Amino acid sequence: MEVMLKLGESIIVPAHAIHSFTTTKPFKMITNTIKSEYEL
Image 1 (cartoon, helix red, strand yellow):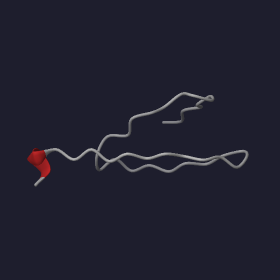
Image 2 (cartoon, rainbow, N blue to C red):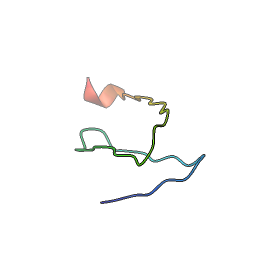
Image 3 (cartoon, helix red, strand yellow):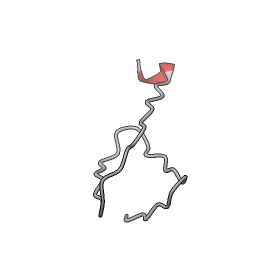
Image 4 (cartoon, one colour):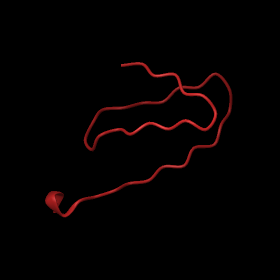
């Protein structure tokens, strides 16, 4: 699946999903990991 994001947009990637990111210009990215007790 290919998704194009614009300034201010975000995407949620499910846990354990294969993913990669490519860009056309340099950018800064903030990532958050939310882990449920189910995965313990």
